[in-house]
Image (cartoon, rainbow, N blue to C red):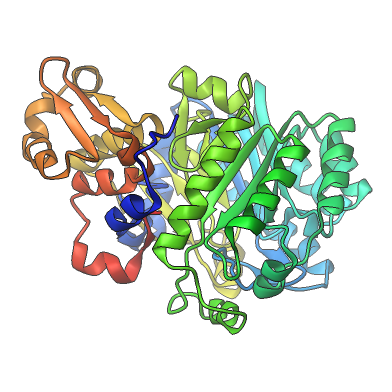
Amino acid sequence: MTLPVALSAECLADRATRGPRYTSYPPATEMRPMATATVARELEAVRGGGPVSIYVHVPFCRSLCWYCGCNVIPSRDTSRGDGYVDLVATELAIAAEALGPGFPISEIALGGGSPNFLTPKAVRHLVATIHRYFTPTGDIRRSVELDPRSTTSSQVETFAAAGFHAMSVGVQDFSDAVQDAIHRHQSQAQTRWLLEHARVMGFRDINIDMVYGLPLQTEESFARTLDEVIELQPDRIALFGYAHLPDKLPHQRLVERAGRVLDRYERATLLLLAIERLTAAGYIHLGLDHFARPGSPLAVAATERRMVRTFQGYVEYRADTILGFGVTAISSTPRMIWQNHGELGEWERAIAERRPPVTRGFALDADDQIRRALIGRLMCDGEVDLAALGDELAIDARGYFARELASLNDVADLASYDPTTNVLTTTPLGRLLIRNVCMIFDRYCEPASSQQRFSSTI
């Protein structure tokens, strides 16, 4: 996406609000307590379908980064990882009992936390367990999140030997001042070593995570970080806006010790700077906040309209169902979304009782499924052909969304609907504020409550 000259940081900031990130629809904030039996029945329903994607959450990190919004358990005792994998193995067995022996899987994704907290022995045990209960498809994708500050050569080699060829590493920002503010110290040399070693071992799809809006970031310092990341030549870059939610994540108050959190005008300036630098370096701007090299798997998926948005961000479509294992992991099927217990003790007790360790979720009704399809396409493509969507869902999409389409007249600078082509299209400003546009079609979104529950839409 090429930015128009008239698009200024002031314009972007003035139109920003707060809203869901739409890694799911309905948003995860709508999940409510859910019974174990409900999930057990849904797993049985999945049994007759196609392959599923498996996500395993490893919550442990060697230290807590003050900006972090993930579910993490700080620890330096790696033996905790061994015991944790033993319990995940049991959770995998519980799911396999419901799905049937040898159920096909098209993806294995390890996230955290820091999956490299696990010892090579624990990694081999985890992968062997997955293969014991499930059958990988011929084109299975295996990906892992790695922390450049603590990943060892033997760990990289272990993941490579287990068939992992895609990885994601966090950078956030290379500025010393910013790293002091967020309690995460990591050099470009450390990051470069990990990327180079991984490439030698056969990794061929590498993502780097960056964050804008962190305390003490400036245009000059962030430009240097962008240049240093570009120099590393990752296949894709995820550029996230810092979500400062100290009421929900009390440890984030620590970042305020180093300086104030950037306002929306400063955030908008950094976002536009990043888009300009990354696209000038040849990256394609995809969806809300991802960038990919032409020809990379994600770029190809976007071109072929196979890019989807999940709790892992923008990814290539692999399956209709994602099964999450481990503390706080989220699972998603076409009919239901649920989340595991966030407290380690509660999760462990459920596993000991050999039941799905679910704590909350929601079942999608027909309206949810229709709106999820539209919002998903908006988030990925920035436009929706309502005629094609209607054919896919067997509805009159134009009539179904008549009220929402009429309300687009009030946000003409963000999106519009052409009744002659049946296409809903976003403007360049609307592409950057795509969450604002999606909120129009979100039946759960109440502007008054959005200010407290959600992050900024830039």
